Image 1 (cartoon, helix red, strand yellow):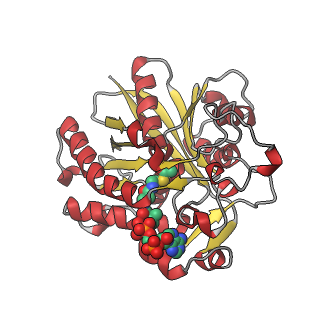
Image 2 (image 1 turned 60 degrees about the horizontal axis):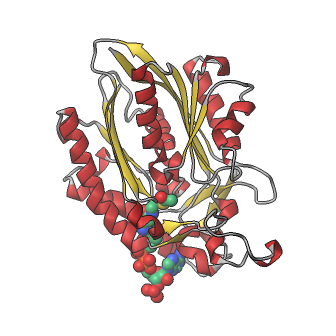
Amino acid sequence: MKKSIIKSTGMFVPPNVITNHDLEKMIDTSDEWIKQRTGIEQRYWIDQEGATGSSDLGFEASKMALENAGWTAKDIDFIIFATLSPDIMFPGSGCLLQAKLGLDSTPALDIRQQCTGFLYGLATADAYIKSGLANKILLVGGEVHSSGLDKTTRGRDVTVIFGDGAGAVCIEGVETDETAGVITSSLHADGNLAEALMVELPASRLPLRVPPDASFDDPRYYPIMDGPAIFKKAVRLLPKVINESLKKARISLDDIDLIIPHQANIRINQALGQFLKLDDDKIFHNIQKYGNTTAASIPIALHEAMEQGRIGASGDIVLFAGLGAGLTWGSVIYKF
Ligand code: ACO
């Protein structure tokens, strides 16, 4: 039977490090508050004077993943791009990345599932491979948040947590009888909670009635978030979806070598560890360096965990899990 195998990973962050002390100069916040409440020490932001979009960061991460897989762009038969910060309203960043890769007919699909985007992308790639629709898939999570953040004190709860970056994986369908590759995926959404975290404008449901030059003070152009509500949902729903996946895969938590959760807040992931009664070294953290890079956070973490030798040996099992705007949440179990 065909299995969806991760052949390689790649990642990219822009060169500008923005420390919590840099943010102190911009808005009313403090290094102490950010570290205590989120675990974040720094993040990477694009040069705000440039014209860099999510597909540009995705392109850099893709080049690394392609090289590590020994593929050229022409080998790819499907592109999936997960982002909540597309380069432009439309067309999607997957199409823009495809052109940057020098391709002109490979199908490209955007996934707009925010922090859960990479998990929806992995489940989609697995379904495409198992159905025979594609066999060599480039899956990218890429985000440029910094250009769309409210850099005044009004937006400080979101502005301090978001970072820019991209992660990419090459996934190949391989015929094998061994239990390997994507073992199971569990995905969920609750659109009743859409307003807990959203950017409202520009929007098809709200015709533009204001002169364009008069509107950028409008908070609806920036992310607004009910942080405590999302936090409570995350600590309740993540253990639930993890147990759901373990049950589907007919394995136990003891069989998991590493949990790679979405990096939204270190306290969420520590609470997850406590709830599941796990040692801290079973949960991967890198939020301190990158902040929350939404759809890019899991592939960046996977790339680093493999580089550090924390996961990736034949037979290792990793569990990915995340929750984000939508609300959307899910988990995927993968065996190397
Ligand atoms: N600096 C200083 N003070 C701040 C900041 C800041 N950056 N942001 C908020 N505060 C203040 C608030 O105004 C509030 O002040 P008050 O008590 O005088 O009213 C106080 O700090 C506490 O605010 P809370 O929102 O209750 O702080 P909390 O401990 O909940 O931390 C945070 C906020 C970090 C946002 C947290 O709620 C969180 O991480 N939530 C989950 C976020 C998440 O997972 N999002 C989903 C993923 S993102 C995606 O899908 C796109």
